[in-house]
Image 1: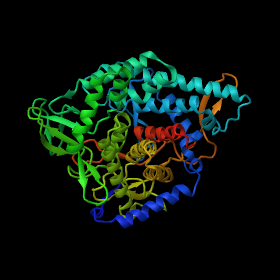
Image 2: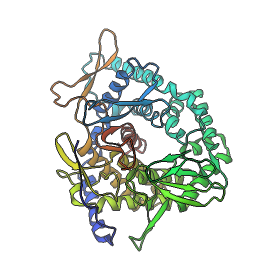
Image 3: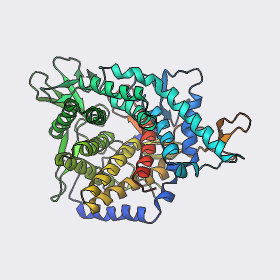
Image 4: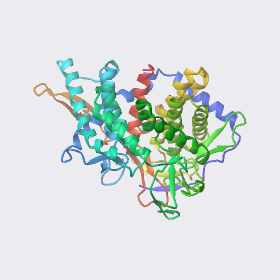
Length: 496
């Protein structure tokens, strides 16, 4: 895999006219196709079969699971194969979450999901029953190791770990044990809150070539957090303490992590710092930094996307105007950087709406599958698109129809461009064994692509030059999860 850097993208100038023109292009992209046709891979048989096939494959000698899928390299000796992490790693909840996303579709929207499967079974009803039963069993097997995680007080990632799968298990099946895990996990997460800082401690330590934050007494590290778990549990149990912690944390980060960008005189646009180190004694900011972005002062694309999604969710729970303004300003800046990126981001007529890995980094070319292309992070686009769809629904509710439509159009443009640029073409199908009545996964006849376990390519987990464990140009478990969740959101709001 070859890497080559060239000069940075152009600096932020007053390019409002150019951006407005580009926004019209995004609108035309959506309006020129029916949503269902332009985003059909979201609901394809291949997408369903990819997740089921990986779930079956990685249960071999891993049942019950102690290793969870994370990345799929696009080059090297393990090309196309999921590389796994221990169950304690922060990404472990996304693969079970993807399984539950699919199960949610099958149970709530069978017309959309089942109709896209080219089932050749002589008994379609038996196929449907077997598919739902098989997927339900996979969901429960892969989510079982998440239950004991709720007692952990050593991580701020409990929302990512337990919520994607277990909230759906509670809401689909009324599984009281899953609800109890969610509520317990929220209490565990709340234990990391510090009243003087007004925030939840994200990491206990962080060290690289430039930073050495290792003291719990002297350092208090905070990144953009997943607060949805606290809001969900707090509202379910009517616990004002949990709601207050989540709201205060979100308020603190408005001034510590968001940077107002002087781009438009008509609206406030915000970029983000990845992390902030506070003084535990004084409650003041000591240092702002990045762990996975290009530089401490740069805008790491996925950090920006987490912020869009997080503040959109926070506004959904609180209905506080400052959180809506933040979510809109963060989304507007993300869109601005997509539209003002160098022309080289356009590959064969697509790619304009698939973000580079860091908006301020020098353009880095990578060579994957025999083609040179700029380094991107598909997972950032998927998280941002989900946040924009949430904004769409909230803005419709308060009567801001034009602004709502704009965010929906950009969310659609991001996903459509991602499908064109990064949807892996290794095709799988689902088949019913007529004797055993078991559903299996097999390669589509004539498919000419080698095995690739993820749905999407071209994510970047970490490309920071000071990080010892860099990973780029790969499938990524949470890129796939947010891809699937985006489809479910469209179903929930009736757009599919």
